[in-house]
Structures are given as structure tokens and as C-alpha cells.
Length: 179
Image (cartoon, rainbow, N blue to C red; front, side, top):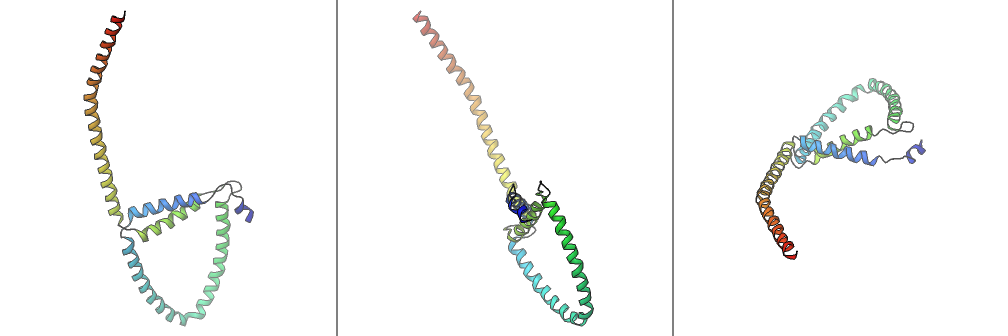
């Protein structure tokens, strides 16, 4: 199996980077809060959850014997599920001669989105407004340049025609004088 990993024809780095970038971009566009606000919310949530977990542990001590049996059964089921999942994932990622990039792209996209949510400098709405403003400014500049180009073309065509006509007449006179 190690040979399969070392003799790959193409790198998994490109799909991972593309998936991360796409996920991060989408997350930045739909972020409801800035990364700083989201991190503070997560801190409050973890503190609250920590207290709840401590209370649950105290209550769980009474149920230890019954829970142990359930955990052993769950562990066994988890092992079976893990083995089946690992085989299936291996089949999806490394087909006989053809490799699927879908799984790495999706996983890296989710990771990229999560990181972008946590580090977002602005809300998604603010980012979208910035993008709209940039697009409108760009459109206005292009429209202005197009108008200037039309004016220059309108003024330039008659001038060019006059210059060509003068040059033609002068050359025509020179040819007549030379002949």
C-alpha cells in the first residue's frame, strides 16, 4: 500500500489548495460575524460547555458500570465502521489506475471555510458591499474611458481624413511636376 502513495502520477496538493481557497472565499462572503467576534463567541461557548461537561461527569460517575458496557459495544461498532470507512475511502481516493480528487477537494474546502470563518476581518455582508463598490467604481472608470475614446475617435477621424487628403494631393502635385 505504501507503494501506491509513493508512486502517484499527480500531486494532491493542487486540489487541496484549490478546495481551501474556494472554501475560504465562500466563507468570507457569507460570514455573519468577524473572526474576532466569532472567536469570542467560541470562547464563551467553550466556557459554558466546560461547566456543563463538569456537571455531566459528576452525574456520570453514578452510571459508570452501565456506561462501560455501552462504551465497549460502541467501541467495537466504531472499529468495524472505521475499518469499513477506511476501505471505502481508499476505494474512492485511489482507484486502480485512476485517482479521485473529489474527497480531498471537499475536505480541504471545508477546512478552508472553517479557517476563513475564524479569521474573517469583516462580515460577509461587508465583504459583499466592498466588492459591489469596487465593481461600480471599475464600471464607472471604464464608462468614462469609453466616452473619452468615442470623443477622440469622433474628432480624430475627420482630422485623419483631412491629413490623408492633403498628403494625397501634395503627392499628386509632386508626381505631376515630376512628369
